[in-house]
Length: 202
Ligand SMILES: CC(C)(COP(=O)(O)OP(=O)(O)OC[C@H]1O[C@@H](n2cnc3c(N)ncnc32)[C@H](O)[C@@H]1OP(=O)(O)O)[C@@H](O)C(=O)NCCC(=O)NCCS
Image (tube, rainbow, N blue to C red; front, side, top):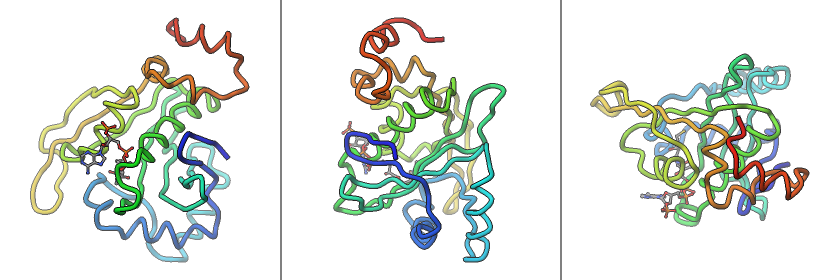
């Protein structure tokens, strides 16, 4: 279990598959994300879940509030162990109760810290549709991510083409975020944290 300030990331359990089905079918999420590779039938979900257990290139976490209410899913997709990079994404059920409360940003910061300090990655990247303002804000304005490129009119959704941003985050980008220190694993001593945050760790 990985703790943030507002959320907890915990491993996906078989008992979460119905919840994942709700996420998969959520219209708002479907509108906001580029694609979704989650299988839709129950049988396929089970096969997918079992394949994840042995898969060293894919990690999924359930995002929960501190009160253990499920909010959504995040993780690492297709980890590239040679280049030490990975695609990441996040899908939270946005309700009146949860939207804009900082859960998304917190989960992104926790994933950053986990990826750089526990998994040992060098870079994370993600694809964002140009109209996905909450996501662009959460990643690029609040969590150290940078826009690295734009593919023009690249994704066809709801009857028209949309621009697609490629965004990325290096370990040093994450460390430049003012409160990144609060996300670095507590096993790293304070002196080392100060050094990490002052120099380019790469
Ligand atoms: C993107 C997502 C993770 C953001 O989660 P969230 O918990 O609502 O966002 P946060 O509360 O952490 O807010 C992050 C920033 O976005 C802003 N924001 C959130 N919702 C917003 C909205 N509807 N319109 C404008 N800004 C918004 C917040 O104000 C905050 O900025 P601030 O700190 O400057 O105030 C969540 O909306 C989501 O999962 N959406 C559906 C799937 C998706 O788009 N995934 C991303 C692509 S992989």
